Length: 453
Image (cartoon, helix red, strand yellow):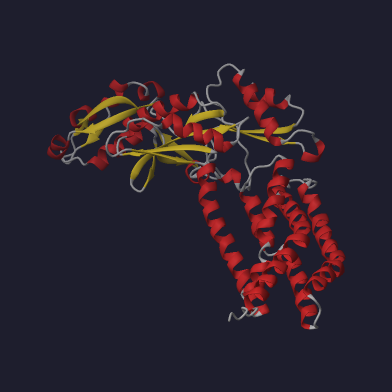
């Protein structure tokens, strides 16, 4: 079985299986399985410190394992828990919307076939499909009205025949009462002819068979049809492996190009990449606002527009270290990395403030420009480096992922370490140089022009 195969994994400590779902669980929390031929398995792993491989390596091996088990047609392997990534349905999400469920399902099949050819996609599946046999009861309204029957009464009679109704209770002396349900036998529930003979009570009390007021047909349907903005939607979802998500999404866009959709139907690409792009825009706006706020504070502090600009030269220097740190650590630009960049913006300017403030103080005492710059770097070098290395030392445990769950936020520490290291070293060279050039330009501009006779 699937459980036995999973328990043979050395990193797996336990497997919990759920067939079916609690009311509201599937719709609100995407928990449980809809049909009796579906199951949801929650797999518990050993602590990360007790295994050498990552959770994602175990997931990749589990996908390959499930492909070898007979009878498993769709196997979706994803992480679960209170993490940012687990709240997204899937990294790749192609959403189709339109008025007709049948046409949506056909379009979903075409999208599914196109995405299967994209390298790097795993666990491709549709959010729902028209594959469940259902009984369609088409009411003959005029005939029903003649017999004094309403659609509600007909639906209630069919429900009682199929699902049953509590007709009495079995009383027990020392236990709670047990409801006694009455419904059609299984053989009659499976027989469409028998269901057509369900008796209804007309307005005059006469018994009327269901076939008199309704037509029953078996058709393929689904237990769940999702909607958004009053439009039916279907999602084709998948996970990525072996390639960066951005590259896979680019190939998905190329695969969907040229796909024709009828009027009133739309295809949108969502998922983790779409969420990241949306959040990245907000983060970049926050970064710009942070840089501007720092500049305004410096203007108020130095009572100058020029010196704060010299100090802000340290901000772009941090990106050299950020890029190098991400490259060395093998990490991508992610939301935690963007948070680290915003954090750096208010940190890397501190060294520039210390240098410029010392230079200005010595200049006010009458010291020459070059001498003030040399003394500033010489005197402030040690405290600047001590501050930088203390910040780096504090971030090292997170960057090295020494704690369980640190994988999520290690890009923050990686970015901060690289940015502080590069900005600190370059600030000692670039900021004094820029200050000297601006001061020389100011002196040259204030120098009076020679008179000509």
